[in-house]
Amino acid sequence: SVLCDNGTPLGKSYPSSNRSMTYSSSMEGKCLGDGILVLLDVLAILVNASSIERLMRIPTYLSTSCLCILRELWCSLVSRVVSEKVKISNEEGCACDQGAKLAEVIFRLSMIQNQRITYGTHVLKKSLFGNDASHFELFMLNNWENSAALVKKSSKAYMDSDDVFCSLADSLKSRNIDDLFNFILNGLVSCPPVMSDELNILQFLEDVKGELGHPIRYSQDIRLVRTVEELSRVSQGHLQKEIHFFSNCTSAGNEGGPDRFNSVTIEDCKNAYSKGYTISLRGMEFRWKRIAAITHTLAMLFGQPSSGANLYLTPPQAQGLARHCDDHCVFVCQLVGQKKWTVFPRQAAALPRLYEQSSCLHHLDCENGACEGEEFLLFEGDILYVPRGCAHEAHTVIKDDVAGADKVNEFSLHLTLSIEVEPPF
Image (cartoon, rainbow, N blue to C red):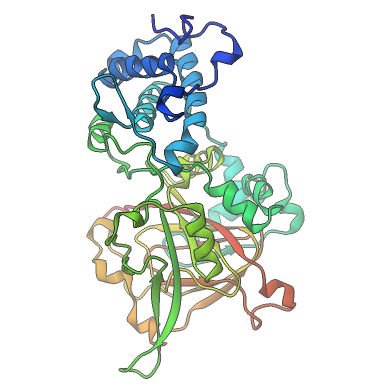
């Protein structure tokens, strides 16, 4: 039986004083208590070396109780892991990252838990397309993989208790910008990418061994970017250029330069935001339970193995990403503030995603003004659908967009839901 630091079997009650993580004064407060450290080492040996079949044999009450304790331990440790990346030495004197070890144990035990949270597809349909069931059918017939579509919501409809985006926005909109930064970013860790068709999850864990539980990393988890216009010598027009807050990162999002650019702090984000940069946070379906429920249900609704979610925080009168197009369809959900979008028609028939040329991601004709786009002004609660292959761009409102000077000084927070589509061919 795996024991707690006071010798009590997991799943049984134990004094609350033993539930919290303790630190060894002999290691200047930077080590876990000996009992907790032994527990973690034992669990890491037993759990991380086990196949899925062996993990499935663990009694449910034992794995559930163990996960509860480990999650409390993680909450106590995460501030040190993220801000200081504490390294602890074991009895053999080898350096080991306790945060990564703990994260891997939690990951493996969570695999055998039935924790997938979803909304009913009818609830998500209503939240995306409104109360009328025919709206979804019309969308599939007229817009899906074809043209942009805007779903405007009245304030009454948006405040509907069944609207999944309203409940999400409520937790965000009442906060000032500093509180919003802390609420969104505090305690976040890196989420190494995993392909939706990955069949061997244990191989994935082997590939990212030692990386779980690390602070969020630039490009992989987060980007700080803004768009500026430059005069084109060829056309004498204006071309857009993406600028990253860390100047050693290219517009394609490649990392480079000093290691300090690999990790991003809340202060980095606040500093970038104050200079007009958009905070682009990836993999929200791995970070917030409510967003995970939305993406799981969205994937079921459209018959796809998975869907993703990114969060974008843009300062007033600013543009984050330059005009671009994606190889997946997106639903833009405006949570806080307002944002103006321009969507351009697809320039050619779209090939299946895996066969599309990467050059299709930049439409120079549209950048040079050879084609006109359709404009959409999104208010809180509105949802915009953008098909894959359609170039698009967005910025927070300026004086010409809305009436009222107060709106010009508002920031924008929106959630982008992505769906990779593979049509038959």
